Length: 147
Image (cartoon, rainbow, N blue to C red; front, side, top):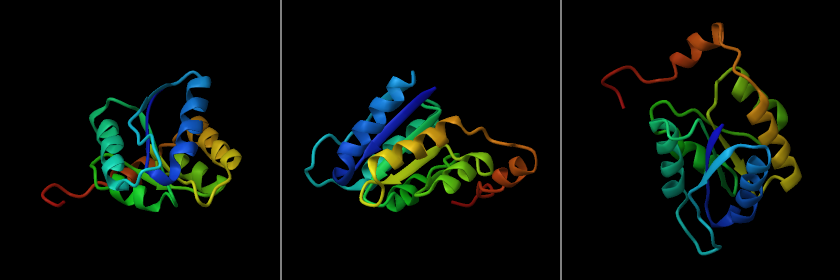
């Protein structure tokens, strides 16, 4: 699977660990940064990752900041992107099974690295159930002429 991954300055170490794990699992990963602890604006990276998912350059994305919330808000501004900020296994599983989330957002300041890896594994391995959930996911997009 093709992934794109990005983070802000608060989450570089965790982003790198998640990137390396995805590659170890055999996935192709485009790391769009940031790569230092110098302060940056998280929406800049969220828009790059969401744009790659939206445009089809990546099947799924991973975004990491302090909480994952800001990244999710920014990424969800893109049509076709369903970014979910997850801090527990149940949410990560349901985000894939019921919401067909295509971007996982994690918080480096709230998750232990090993637990973040567990959430990533769930996000990677959990299929979308479709059926009634497909109808609901389709309704997540704004009607034409809006947004």
